[in-house]
Length: 537
Image 1 (cartoon, rainbow, N blue to C red):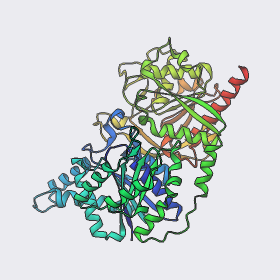
Image 2 (image 1 turned 90 degrees about the vertical axis):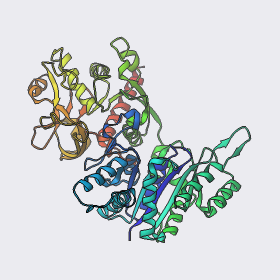
Image 3 (image 1 turned 60 degrees about the vertical axis):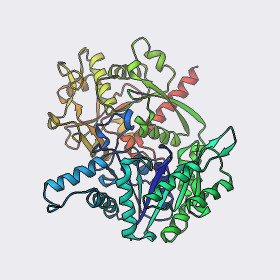
Image 4 (image 1 turned 45 degrees about the vertical axis):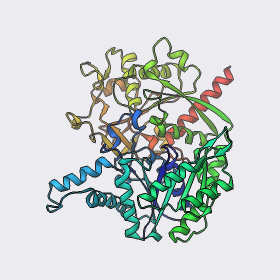
């Protein structure tokens, strides 16, 4: 029978529920169990697809095209399993489904209520992720903070799940803040006590308390939390701030975290094998050089807007024995007068995805600077599109070259909306999810090999084939296409040592134990560029 683990958070948000859930998933996988993860978000949006990155951080896209919370990226990176449409549920999607069922007469004239109709919808979703993945264990993170009115239906639903599957098949983990008051030099357990009391008032008794702390917690504080929160002392586990995210599973397992969970769920603990994970941590520790990469975007004030890109850069650094230092560049502030000063010290330039016209001219300047100065360049989605625009303007001399997204009146829209996406609503209408790509360019072949690959997409604008021949004649290479050759998936400039743009989002498939191949080659090229620069200097 499938086992269910629910992770809730208390006191304040941003405590690392997602990392805790992801770390536990990795530990259970290292014990030989098949794990599936999901996130329940209490906001009323159907999904985060139309939300500003400043509101919610990046939108993570799954293989089947679901637009999801960024925590799903952590889940995939830690457990190395592809998630799906059942991995992220919002209040908006719940009510959307319930109301559509009511309109279709599926409730047979019943009065539609939060209990049982809304909670049943949530429970069905929870059960489905286990069924579709054949998982031994389903780990579900509840977004928000205990006490929030928005999350109450989700809390009630997981209470019912525990009742339906039996407490031996269900484990509740509560992540909470234990603040340290420097003036009195003492930890304060009262916020955790109140948070757990709130949770208990909703019918849930946590089995394990994960205490978020910045320094080791004294044994007497742990014992006090255990007593007042009605858990065993061994079930009060501290989660300290760490320099490297991927150290978290090892730290938690030092307190026998996954063993305790197995005991609670009456699972055979099996022998845990952390060999490969520790090898990866060894590669991280062995990095002996630092490479500086300019991440040039329009949402750089919130680094979580580019979370998967930043992580993919770090992963590529692990495989090139390099620490990746990111220089966050706001492209809205870039001009012809300051672009050289801003970028002259970097070893590589990456322009990630995005939507809308703000900051576009700055991105085009980044693409031009990289091309002219032979600095390694990697454009992702919008970063590929701005590279094509730059080439059309400065090499083909089409001064008005643009995307129809930004200037539909341009005579040279080298980027145009996909024909089957014209006139559609904003939400849920992008080309999303995994699509195949043929590798044709040298960089693509070097990264992937010769065979076709599958990459995840999230866009509605694409390379305009009306300008394909003209751009190719001018030196741009069509480096990747759809299997039928119609859609341009990647471009390269062979005159440069490393210059590539891809229409897809490779960052979503990078893992700490296996960096994405294009990111790996990009950092490899950046390290080489740095070495050459230092030699000249």
